Image (tube, rainbow, N blue to C red):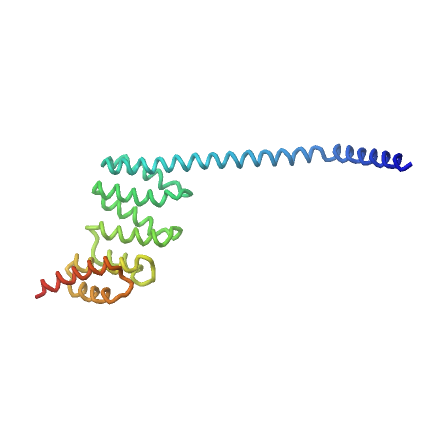
Length: 216
């Protein structure tokens, strides 16, 4: 008797399953297709993104090769293309490469614009922004003292990883524009800092010795 009830119960379950399938089959198939399409699309995106990143990487190193070969026009174009890939980690490096291409090609104004694009962009890590400030000043032979000093000020007035380097650059900037007294004063302050490296201290002491000897 129990077997009969089990068979009836099983048939009812099957009927219910068939009715449910007939009622929701289109929705179930649609959801399955969505899942399959999503998985295929995601895998396709990963493959596309990987290939794109490899292409960007290859283009960046081609630009470096052209730069070393002194083919500045070609390296500039390659770096420019790289710098426009905002989602790539190579975009910032490409901006530095673009600035270097312009510098070696004697296009100082364009180089300064490249560095300005970096240090003005608040979405870029502060380390790279400060590094662009330093490189801009080191390679700039046309801007005035006030222009270069104002570019250096943000690094001198707030703690950052390149603060000590910026302080040394300030000394060199004073010397470059024949502000020897200011240079000596800044040099004395810098030599008293405890966070300067051994190599940097040696450089500063050598500069200090040269200018003291000349003063005598």
